[in-house]
Length: 272
Image 1 (tube, helix red, strand yellow):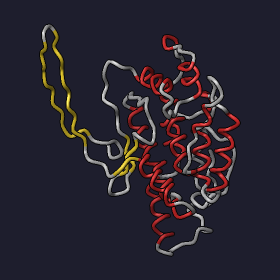
Image 2 (cartoon, one colour; image 1 turned 30 degrees about the vertical axis):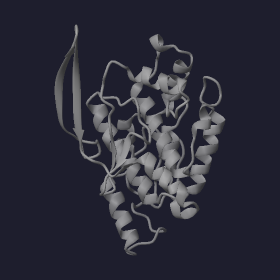
Image 3 (cartoon, helix red, strand yellow; image 1 turned 135 degrees about the vertical axis):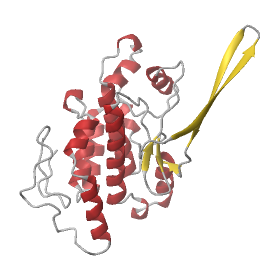
Image 4 (cartoon, one colour; image 1 turned 60 degrees about the vertical axis):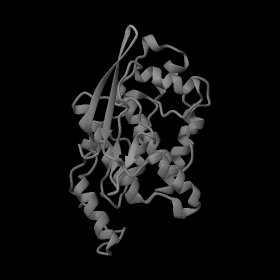
């Protein structure tokens, strides 16, 4: 897939030592330009508005990642470790997701180890609560919707250019009040892009039942080619931000999960 970091080749080497046999797996991936984590840190150092991600950057990131994970969902693949460290930016500006190679450690155990080492995590509420309670044998959550929440947090952190880890400072629960503060700040910062901020808000729903899957998101969003065409015309002065891309009779793509209606420069009746 265009937005999944490609595995180019691999090799398996058998190593024997005394009474044990080990298998050494080497994987060779395409070389990305940098991780999203590195990009965020570099932008933080710039300071002021010059370091901010542009509307176009974040919108492309949203589309690329939703497209990639929708493809993975269709193939019954869950990621389990979405973070700024597993999203990479190519030299062309594509945002690609990378996988950690499977081994004997489950994703749940990996995330628990991060929590115990006080490392940054990007976990959905149900999963985070179960891990904090060391309830590994009885974790009840939707892996896909947990991935959606994780990606929402990545987009939130990229837009704000600051850590959102304080949402995990409330014992074994995600701090909904703190999360709403970040989401409100994000909405104010990108108020001219309802497509972006309303998508991120929906991805960060605390209640898993209210959170869409990647397939839901892909079906709800406007066509990516039209978004790219809009940004191209805007960049080259062919239209202004006040001009609408779609007429008022265009179909509503969010009829399956709509909460609020926003006027958008990207679609006149965009809803999510």
